[in-house]
Length: 161
Image (cartoon, rainbow, N blue to C red; front, side, top):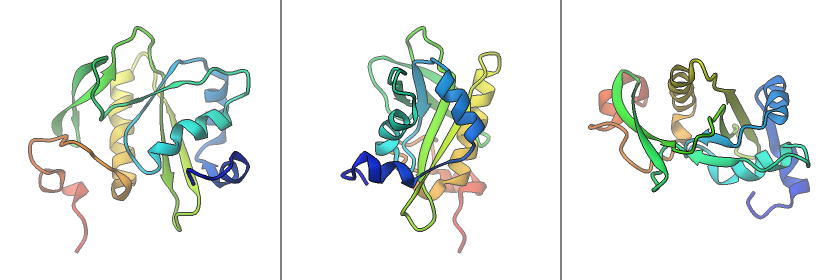
């Protein structure tokens, strides 16, 4: 899909909630939070194609990739303490997005979530838990998030069998 033309790529994107997409298109938040899940390498391109041509391209911030600009944030995910990398700039991120493969691996699902300023940390934790639970099989998880493997510490992430 990375080598496909925009005309071929765009029809493969299914948006989870069109109303949320419309809000996202109207919003001017400069940062969109994400994690390495599913087709994360295609997320920036998908968002660019779905934004109005007059809209500025948003910065994607991966919560599971550390950089010099990151600030550490401790939170509880699935009843266990972990640390994620939040952006340090003063702009407040209001969105979380992932792009995952749909069954059959021929199309993609764009899942956007608005994060309220008033309840940002609670919204972020709930969103992270939902997307990790819903798409565990597509979570790349490049670094350990918990002191022991998640499958040992967190029963809800254990595979069947």
